[in-house]
Length: 459
Image (cartoon, rainbow, N blue to C red; front, side, top):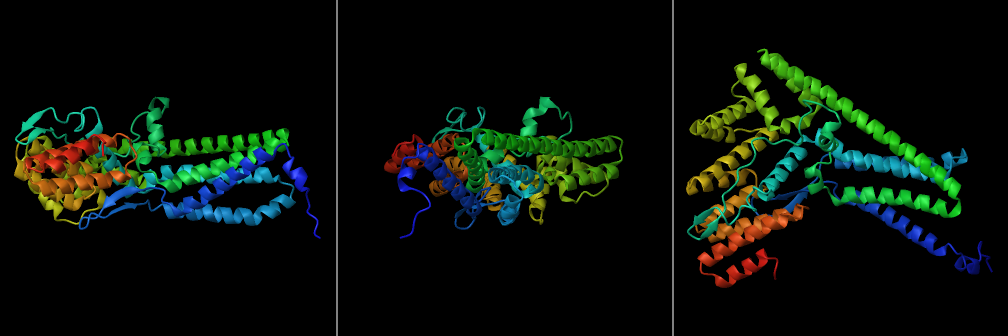
């Protein structure tokens, strides 16, 4: 009969049995979370198709490289683990370094996303801006039901989008502690990140952090002195990571700030070619600048002054200038011309923002047919525009188009599946209220009551 290497009785009589089992269970959960992080998206922008309204999400192009990097690092580490142990390295120290290194790689992901994946970062910033425009204290939801009477009930004075869209404020002034909020955004942890961060990223953070905690817990029950030594090593690694991380961000943004300042000075002195070169160099260094409306207009201005009026950026600058100075017909004609061209994503996004502004101004001016036309054009280009769908629903309430109202309401509910903010409930409730008004105007009292109850969160 085979003899067990341990006594069953001593195993059950171990006073530390429960803590050990809890620690082991947490370690299993941590490993499971890390495995799930490779299967789930790290970023999830909500999307719907134009034709069938099918819901899906898009991830960043950086997610797969990050996952492969962590996977490759893990394989190499565990293959080399026997070699390190043979050289008298402590197993707990090695596993803690592995966990903290993997955690550090995961935490850098948002930073590189907003700096390098300009298309995803720009789209996320615009979707977040639309949500903010709907939900802030002066936005559509809080000013709903109070400003304008329409035939079918109380209406909403639609709020147009801000003049400028940016993922963050460019580093054009001080980089000191007075801009702490900007440092958080430059690190990648702005509102558009917290709104659309994917489950996979959270699984990776929680898994590696929990695994590191389990390692410390296992040593703490066995040898407090050794556990404290391992903890000090881990804290040193965390301090080094923070120092390197923030220093790298500081140098990166300081160098970009110098290029932007040089571009501003060259433009101010009338050297538009040099100003354009500095702007292009800064965009090559920090691609996300091409998602900044102010940057696009500045680049367009330098190109326009050099006689290159047909570049997308120069035409967008002219659209903005015409609109600001009251030449709305000329701005509209130029927008329609731009809409026929094949544009880069940053220019297409900016043009869509202009279409949204025109549609809202027409709606507030009582030009219902023109507003509906502009909104339809916008949503054919940008089916993920929650603000466009919201105002389409408002316009169709006034136009007594029940089916279009229902369609807009369904799209708003579908898109908001991908938003994490709790205040999205206000948008959904207002959309349901607009639907109830449309159903009531059509004589559908039961459907109107059902939509009204849904707007109150009742079933």
